Image (cartoon, rainbow, N blue to C red; front, side, top):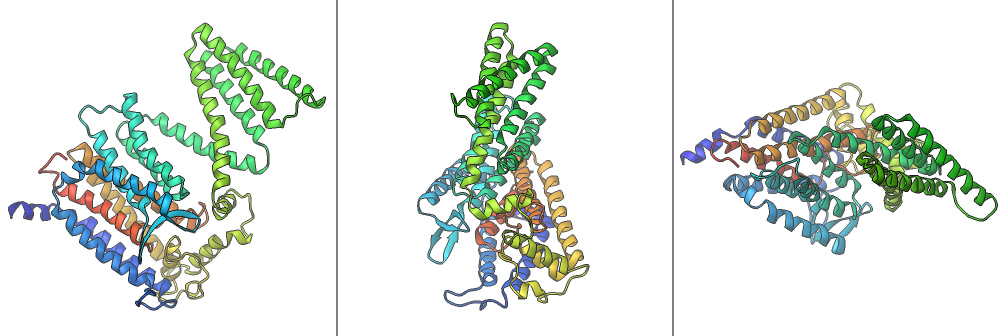
Length: 477
């Protein structure tokens, strides 16, 4: 009994209180955007507000079970849970139900589960378990590859659904790895490829992929010139490239070859890269292999981006194109975001009041209980309510960072930063997409958006960390 009393005393009640406030506030907003549309309960016609209440009840039962379990259970079961949810992610590709263009749901009678939401939790636990091994070293290539594989495998399965929003969430785990010693250069490279992703979409939209290829080749050449400190190399390779382009263009003009502009540039890059590799082998220049390797990967990446983008549902393509300014915002394809911004702006400073939202009552905002629940906050409670909600989320994240840093074990600390990273990503992207500065990609707002799978998964993440924290003085787990 003494151990149980200590456990209760060690619970971080500040986080619990914030969770309860967010849960109640979230339910009120779900009720507000659905109250006038459907009956509260009934066979086959239960409203989102009623179903959310059911999921809140289920989540509280799960919280009770979490505190009954020994804190070491989560480390012990990390790999089995990971394997189980990877199986579900593969299963959903075979028998899943498609919603909003993504085959992400397993429907069992009246209950629908989205395995990708729980896969985030399972991946977080598996990564924490692997990285907390006594012989783990971030600098060891084998360990780093396995770590990225644990994150990348579920991310690719989610992308295959295709659920681009949930796929991006897995990228948030890079922040966890950075905290545990990952080189800052990795984040710079990832940021560079994110920029390359956006640039590829822009140039491809204008049928100017060859410009991007020329730019990548030029950057690679300049980097090598700086590293080797031999400006003559820049002149020689530029001359070779120019001669190749002229020759290929000559053959194209006289119909000896039939090539597009990007094919001409691609062939030029290939030939110059082979010459550079031969030179690198002869002179034993390691940096040449590194630069050519990055160039090859970047070129392949740009073509992969085009292929993946074309396979996305049309509405996802439209939303990304709108964000990049490739489609006018007044186009009917931008209706969701336009109505979202109108709803938030109409709340002005203090809001219209609870259940008084005209945009909500008029059902102008699509997907308002889920992806666009923040519009309800802005319309009903205005700038003050929106600012207060963001401040509450900020307080939660700051508190979770404090909890993560005070852990005595690496496993618990990694779990802590995993929770922070996932919540921060969801919060930033969801609010950004409702105000039009990020494409709409189906990211729920934690503890507010309607959805049983997401609410339960967020609750489990949060309270597993609270459970680990409550036992930090008892076990080194």
